[in-house]
Image 1 (cartoon, each protein chain N blue to C red):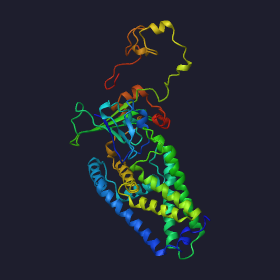
Image 2: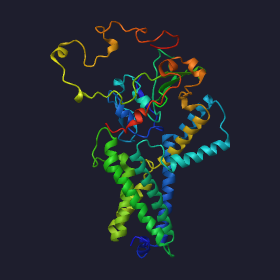
Image 3: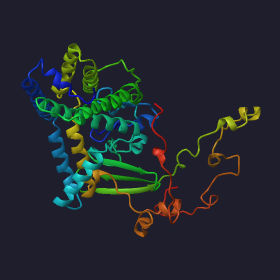
Image 4: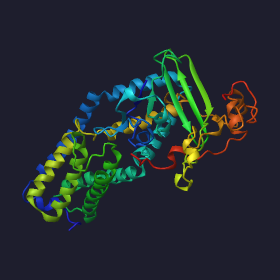
Length: 273
Length: 160
């Protein structure tokens, strides 16, 4: 069952052209919603102005090749590995949802556009796997991490407008799996309603974070490379004689070769609130 | 002046929520990022600023150490055992880096194990001294503590 294309049976009731038009419409809604979101939050303007102000503090020019290197490292670490998350559980849950979502969306498009021909059972398997990954990561977030992370301690049934993205995403993938297993047209209608909400409400939800978070991570790396450090102080090498002379506190309190002082705040995960 | 959070840097990890002694750093229910729920109650202890692993929290410094409009940012590096400060004046020309050793004891080293300590005697209860009163502030035990008695020498540029 999980290796068969669920949209193939559906093509008896709904013309493939209609399904394909729906996919194109959803893509257009995401693009439009993201552009509106960028305009409304002025995020592009924010990054541009911040970049200009940090350039004034820059100690050196970051060349084109180096910028490409930074972009690649942002892609490898922050985008593909969700390296920005300090909380390991949130990182794992985010990775599950992100890879699950991308797999689900891409395979949906492949299955729908290939509905008239022969599609590989492997693509259908990936479609189910993607939906399942979103469900695992998403319900873990919803029932455990989300409840913990909020110091107000709201329960899982306490839903806000801000939960539009996660709720519609979870409903979309859950209903997709249930529809694929049961084949009910009612479940299919609910699946389409959830998917339309997910892709049609980018302006109000946090789906657009996938575009501005990498931009913020990239800017952070450029600020480190050009020496402006986002106005943060430098951490010089403590054994350097110039540093010792400038800050006599260092050798007085810490000795000639300051020891490793431990992990500090990172010693334990923040779970006390 | 109270703390504020850069939304593009914060990932909602909750370290600031954990460490805030006034319990006023919370995770926003809408955007799941940290924010100061009660700026009036913030006493600018900088605990959250130093604890934030993303350096996403800042405090606007008071006008008594730099003219208003300046930027003051701090990094606490536990591995090196130092706290670094950078103050940039609003004209952008005065840009100061400062560095000081962390003078508190390593994290977790001094968690009191009260269960293992014997219960206080009547004499201790009636005493004016606090439980575990630090020896450096006690005057009834060896007199005033001085640099000399602690094996230190006055040195320019060192804070005692």
